[in-house]
Length: 464
Image (tube, rainbow, N blue to C red; front, side, top):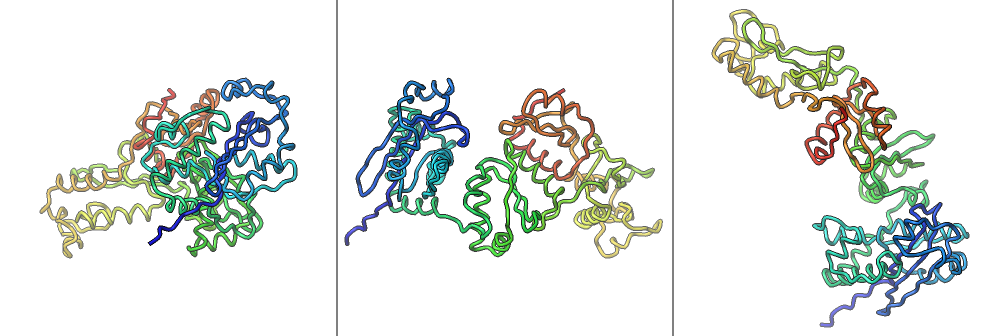
């Protein structure tokens, strides 16, 4: 049997050097394209006159000086040639949004529409080498022993991508790589009222996104560490999931707010859902009727749950709080569930009235262990109650004052489980830490508590 020959579509490994990181303001100084087509490898490269100043730090990084590009052609002069080199090929780059964004913007400025299929080698690396801790180009070079010829020059870096592709081919084979090409370049079906240009402008950074319907009515608010990928995930899901399809058909516009990291996105999502009440989110409740149980001994030495209402509630400062509930009904339902699970006496818990000297109704139907009759000693009843309630104990704020948590490039400022704001410099930190009391929010308490017991516990900076 003859082995089937697997052929890729034409692939263009692309790298550019630029005067900065903003494709609307900065310009391309060098471009290199290394192409594989029908087993032939070709190279196209050129310096480009950016017609703007090249900052000193960029000159040091790339080695490209104003003198080197002053007599070179502009992008407009090379545009036809570059387009011919890329036409009909899969555009492959590392952090492809950067290279593709710059080249697309450069074409757009001279009236040329440029929409190739794009494959990002960061995503390729994550997919094929999931156990690798990082996927930046320097890590890939080290992990796969790639040969560096000219780092931070366009052709040198394009060649590294070509080498990485050869590593991938050797590791998983051509057939699997072809599947990966289709997987990573497959275009999700966009909603009928959303165009590709809007999608392309969404950054792949942490933050929150807002889907709007007719008349700017919020439909759905979500968060992600990769905004654009998550938004596209909704539209891909619309092909198979009824809920996503319903959402996709109603979307008229998309907005987003970037955050420094995942923690900021979680907090912002909670706030935005409460403020804007989007139709398709689970409604989050404000903490205006918040209450909790405290445990106090009566004259007989029996621990009695007492409900602490909003006006007397100081979460983060009071040591004897259990639960945190949005309403009295929710608090009583929880206490009833505890009584049933641990066979505690509802009379002693204050959930039902009793007659002195007689057992409670729960004891008669074998739902009470008998603390009301003395069969179970008061000390044992107290211990059982406290053990059950300790699972839901409200943690006292473990710091002497406000703290900041590093979250990407931002600082999340908190005090007594309350979110005070986000700072990006020392002045903002000083202002936020002395901003006074802020309303306690149960959802943010849960987010922050989880963060401080997980990966963010080593990112804390005390501000006292």
